[in-house]
Image (cartoon, rainbow, N blue to C red):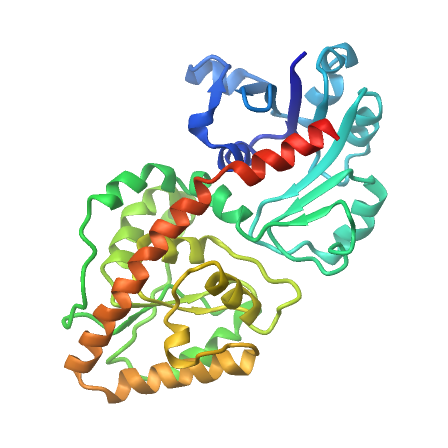
Length: 360
């Protein structure tokens, strides 16, 4: 008998399983037709390694209305229910035989504390998260994978299709005719802490930040921004990347598409992020310019010190010195993309997680 892995709602869910198991390792079993896709309530893939159909239900109610006999024809079942406030979904789960209820948090965002009581009430058999949540880490059913968002973003933001393109673009060396430092940066109400760093630069000769969403077009049609991203990330000199969460918050840290893009394009990057994340990336072999200016970054103050040294260096060194150092940093940074691809193309850990869940 085949196993069944089910996701309820599939607007953002399909990239999860593609990232965990690999698009090339899955057989698409639904009809490949746009009209059929738009009118279908279920999309189906098949994993031969897990002997499992992977089904994505479009709507909560369609999942609830599906007869129990349909689900019970399968052997073991993993039911991923992300919606916490629909009691009907959780009641439906109780009617399905030989099933485990699972929760996956693939976003590069923190579990909000208001979720915790509902998660406890839902009694999940397994929780896989790409972001830390201190209150859940002691739970034996909780698994933290900080690279989970990278596996998701590879498909969700369409970089799966950019990989071969970028492979064929020579990586530019230092360009004296552009700013020394580039960054997409927004400093809104909840991210004013970024100003602490921006104000330390205070020199338009080396840095002019760019807001990547300037008007309604950018907000409504982000999928057309790939070539803007290639132009900005690949043809900049040093890239200053701000992670979403405050750099002092090591308890709830996570990685987002901003860091994914910086590593993907393999250019020298100074990353403003919680020091626990910086250490995590370094320990996994990634190169960050941060550590050229501060050997050990173990506190938020260490990060600030490294940044101050970096900016002072950019302001005081002559162009030849900066160019020579940059090209040396570039040789180390280029490997970031290779390492990133090795990680997102290694499906063994994710396969083992799902296999253990099915067989335990």
